[in-house]
Image (cartoon, rainbow, N blue to C red; front, side, top):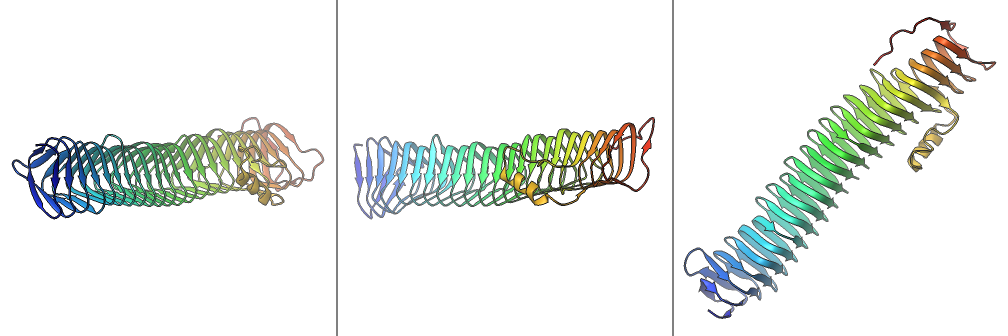
Length: 414
């Protein structure tokens, strides 16, 4: 059969069209035999049309209105629909571009799915990329490289291996693996594993979160364990389990860890709370830190005006040094601003254990247990217990009890 034209408002029973098919507005296509119609060339629809069977063609275009397909829609090359396409079955195509809405049972696209308004898919979506101006709802899992949604995106879990960028709300009802997930509004995951997660609104994770990099600009609630290489908290982070940062945790906001914290570097310019903290290298504090069991690091620097609750354990511990403790944190203005806010306040800590402990001006702590101790002017200590040397010069130092030199220090916590 050569190229075929179906008149406006008519019904055509077709089988196989050799060439191109043009369908007038309001027409209906049905299968003459079997359950589908195949067009070897392009299929062009001038307006609203119904296809009451499976439909396959080389390329498909709809100039205006809505195309409804009661079965599967298979297009070798591109689907180009000005307004709406609705298929009860699977949609398969090389490229998909829809100006308004696309509704389907499932979608498989070799290239990119671009939709100006809304996408609703009952089952799965597989594509190189999905780019939607409004909202996306996928009942099943997704298998994508990239996802870009201007408003709402809701998926049933799966994989987004490249970059996902959502301007409004992102929700996954099943476990999701991702590359770079950026959400500017609200993000909700049952559990997550990926390379990078950045959120500037509200993040809720029902289970464990495992990333190489996490950036929280708003509020984040993780109801399991959280593991990351580097983390930056500019808002509020609440972790029900433990938090592990194999690299650096920059805490410029508020973090509350119900379990333990472990990391390579810890920078606090806000508020940090954990059951205990073990830092392999350096901890720098220009805010408030609370640990029930203590904070341990090779080096601990507590800036002027900071407050620490719980034991401090380290190689070298400095309290209330005159320099701004956060001045070298990648020149981060939040850290510098935090240090400036604390200048002039008393620095408070509890028990301190270390090889070398140095108290700067206006520093207060309870007990010091160390090999070498240096007490600055105006420092206040209940008692100093040391093995090697106590340096206080002619400074005005307040000791509640006399210092004591011993042969052996008591065991350190942690």
